[in-house]
Amino acid sequence: MASLREYFDPDFSYATRVHVKLPAYRSDVEVALLYDFSAVPSFLACYVPGDKHALQVFLQLLEALQPGKSQVTLDGRVTLPSARMFPGEMEIKNTNPFELRAKFHGDPEWISNKEIPTSTRIFIYSESRLTGDQISQLKQRAQALGQRVQFRSIDHAEARSQYENPLAFISHDSRDKAEVARKIALGLQKLLCPVWYDEFSLMVGVNLRDSIEGGLKKCRKCILILSPHFFSNSGWTKKEFDSIFTREILEERQLVLPVWYGVTKQSVYDYSPSLLNVKGVDWNQLGETEVCRQLSLAILHQER
Image 1 (cartoon, one colour):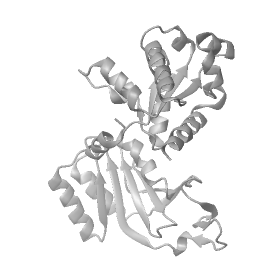
Image 2 (cartoon, rainbow, N blue to C red; image 1 turned 180 degrees about the horizontal axis):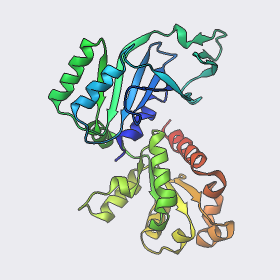
Image 3 (cartoon, one colour; image 1 turned 60 degrees about the vertical axis):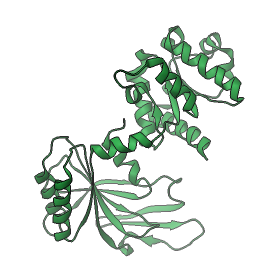
Image 4 (tube, rainbow, N blue to C red; image 1 turned 180 degrees about the vertical axis):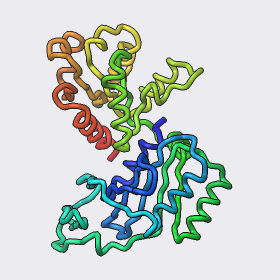
């Protein structure tokens, strides 16, 4: 299951995010002022780390976000939406005081964030659980301060995970888990590309064979992390490879997305000559961010 922190960034990937600080509040809380140049209003989103916070922590956050109570200052970061999420151009014109400008393709007019009204909407993300009564108290206090709050806790993440069907299966040797597999799984989740990955998908007491075969059958793609460990494994990884290869024959379409990790053309050929005919991504050459980006494009393209 994805953590709530992993939802915090992609949930608002369509908006320009200006990272800010609250000098009078906890330094570990992430606060972002978000501008949606398509829908016009700007709003605030906060991530409060920790899973044991009481209601008082969030009530204090509402107070700190009040104009005049705590000076909100830029922390030097601005995250622009991807070209896929924003069909136009964007620029940072000034930094202090900051100004963002955007224009859509085909429209010569620039829109400034100074023209965008600020809404009273605040999103609060936290792994901490609050009861229904506590959330109601939080909303009531927000309303008294002229704010509208949506509180998203670990309950929110758990409920969403139940309905997010994995799009790709990650097949790997357990010895490559920490260095590659887990990083790819988390990276794709952040790019709104849910995956079947053993640490996310296998629960205590489930039938391993049934669960793995179910994942291999349902997913649109299979990511193979090809490594010396993978090639030497005659157990689960070999069975997974055989299953996905059989499915390719049955469905007559390409399902495999190879990730090369410390392997050569010769070693890939020695394991399976057909794999050399499939374009893969090289982890050692491209690095984590670019590998995840290219994999997500290949997987999500299948969805269109």
